[in-house]
Length: 315
Image 1 (spheres, rainbow, N blue to C red):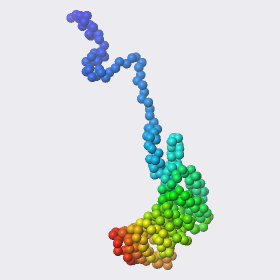
Image 2: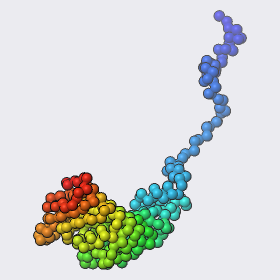
Image 3: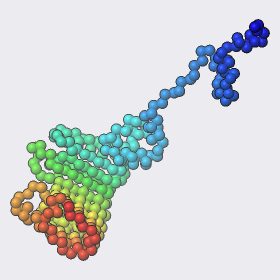
Image 4: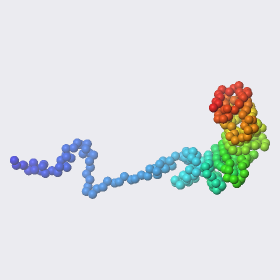
């Protein structure tokens, strides 16, 4: 059978073109002609880390500063390498937390820590502080350094001050706890105070007019000191004492104190001190909540006037 010229032209049509002719209109619309040697442009590679940083940088300064305040101060300082904008943001954080609680610490470690704290305070541009906290091993020869830091906190009007200074026991500085300087007892800007392993001995009156929460632990307290503190804290709402010794009567007459927390007894004491501390009389006519936990719950506690108490917990 002979083929006509028209039949030959159809059979000689490239197969690829034949398939293309059989495709749907929608497929044809998606296909485009590509000239020989054509190479599609490569999609630019993006740096995910850079993109994330750029997104953060779009946030207002006060949001970034708040985020930095949630980090340990060392990590907050490290953000200065991100960009020019981040270089000074950390200096405006409202809360400063300094900690040195390594299991193996040397005098040199403490000296480096002191230098780090000093340099950080020098660079701080915050006019007012919300919180100032130092948790580190302590030796008496570093008392002047801690005094300098607490003065800084007072100067910046810190609302919260927390000091935890356990003795390092490095054999070169005695065994005396850090004694709170007298100017701390008359600072009326404090709203929250926490002292651990610090000697609390006010010589004059206490004037904590704005204090609403107080936590004291790992220290010997006398009834006279407690009386001075309560008398000078007219708006105190929460009082927490832990690992304490030195008294067996606790009288809280403040109408503002609504919650009392007592945790554990002093872990190391003489037999006489233990027998004396095994009894505790509590009188708090305006108290609403009482929590006694740890070994202290096994003491011979006698509740006096607690007529308004609504909740108690002994564990």
